[in-house]
Length: 205
Image (spheres, helix red, strand yellow):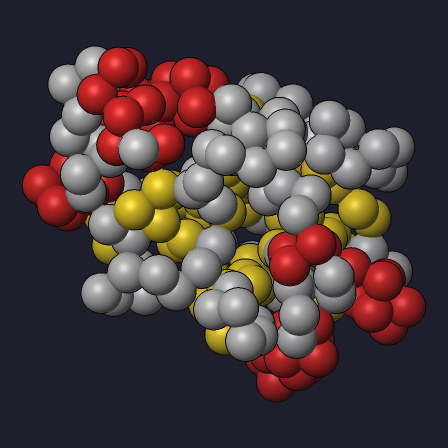
């Protein structure tokens, strides 16, 4: 398997990030969370000569999926998401699902908490975390459909990834656009909570 290229794209006034993932050998790619400025993602693909085949959503909140229709109107993508967040996607993604992109691959982690169908996409030494994990922060757990206990357990899973794993978040909320799991373990208060009660107090307090 080859390493997929990851392009981080500023995607709107809510500090969203969208992502272009592509195989450098076949130039086939996927759009992730086109958000509020899908034209920027389309332009990034065009500039690099990438043919989009998949449209992936980390979760179903409007600021992440608002650009789906525009991506679908301009490409022949298949929509892939968790059915708890986006009913009847063309490809239902669950824990353990995999997607091949050219000669590369994405592994899917189901990380509920921010939403019931939140997903993290892992490729090589990197994860695209949506609103589950931000640089120095984590997603909200007080929204309709959120579950603070689920979010805690999802973050515990991410903490076990190798320290060098690159973190690509769904929003530009931290001191840097990206980080690593090792950096988060040292600097993210939410990952440093010793137990569930302390996490609930910090996240909902």
